[in-house]
Length: 103
Image 1 (spheres, rainbow, N blue to C red):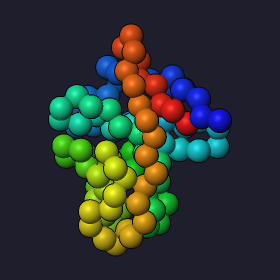
Image 2 (image 1 turned 60 degrees about the vertical axis):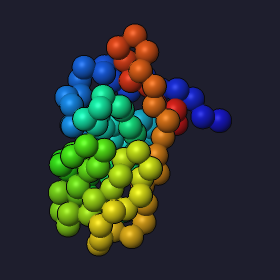
Image 3 (image 1 turned 90 degrees about the vertical axis):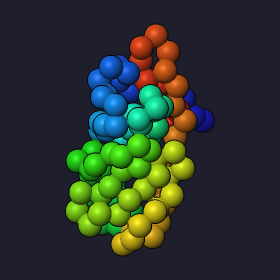
């Protein structure tokens, strides 16, 4: 059963930035886009398990720092190869200045 996890303070993430969030034995990223929306996806690139927290965020996309695959963080969809598998996405909400993720 999914539960809402308190991941971080909303202020911890600058506009068009990303942070790593670990829960249990899994790694996620939380991205804040240019319109102040927060998204959560798996934290590893589906191409070669590279940590996406080091990637470049532009609007609502993140670029893998190793081979430059680009993912839409709102849907998890791959926009450019070499990755060919989408990221899983997780619902987020902001309450009282905190970002919560449904895992």
